[in-house]
Length: 249
Image (cartoon, rainbow, N blue to C red; front, side, top):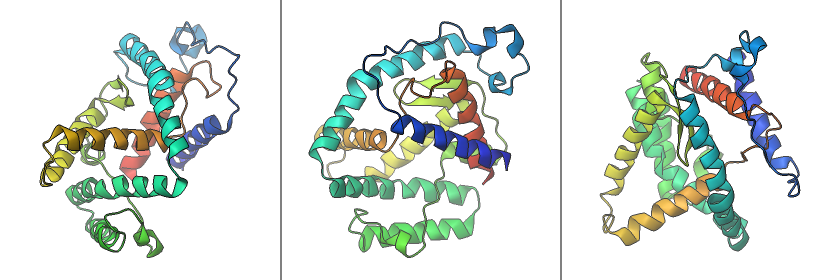
């Protein structure tokens, strides 16, 4: 129940960020001090996260905010302006379907055979009837998506999260999940390498560019719009709890 609470709390915050009005006239000023510097904060569980690289992580967090504001979001806004909603959904479905291969592999590695079978069936249905995953008839057949990644697989077998990390552009992570992300990327690259012309720059560069835009398009989070003066601490804590919930499910 506690894990569910934290999951719902994070979702609520992210949705709230999207629904808050954007105040162009109010400058965003990140806090000059961390929550851990407050003498009475020692008993707060929100700072009970292993973060030995916190100064560097905070710098990267602010870099990500700048990158998001001046590069990522303008590109996403342009994408949303010129692309009809129907096509946006088709693009999201297409990339989501490709990543079913990662879901399937990690579900299988965790020996969740029933779920792996449903994931395989979902991939086959969407790849054929759904025309390369552009449509999602599998959901209508109650073949729902179960997201799994290699970080969850490592956590499933008892590997701890390790130090908290903020990855440039990508955002919150930890050592275990960063390793998992690299492994999943290698797996996806190996799968896509079977496609003709995949090794050519003109293929993979637009592929990953559009996928990145699509992922940001589907993420409601906006930096420094959570309403908390200690957003870094809050996001760090919630990321850890949500990942714990994902691994336990």
